[in-house]
Length: 179
Image (cartoon, rainbow, N blue to C red):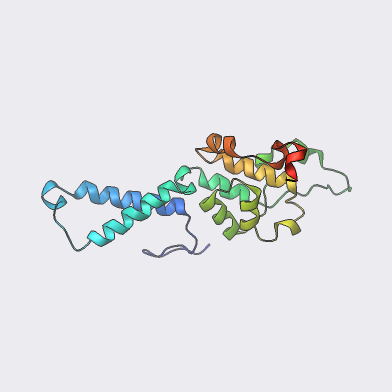
């Protein structure tokens, strides 16, 4: 990993990290203000307005529902290579069956993991838009995709509220599916 110089920014930064940075900057600036300078318009009023507007937008986005402390756990699991289902003898490895799903990975790229963190998808359609060639990846079958959505939902604060609104074609009677 390349060591960053002072003032350099990494090439991939999540919305959660940007949100935390803006909170820190705005908080530090507000702590320094006193009543005499608060009402005065200064040369940085446009910067302040832009930063506050971006922060407000990010707080209302899916990134605003995620804790920055939880992101490394999610990234690790998204990026970790999926387990090999077969052992050297050609049979199924019993230890991998006994392992908790949280120890297995999904083998996503850095960009895909970043997009998942930024958008926190709740549906298969969103997942298919984020993960390139998902249908060509045998380790990401339909069951694993559903598990991935469940994992992502655990990192969202409002997962329960959104699950109440989600529905599938299975929720409708057969005669209503074709109308």
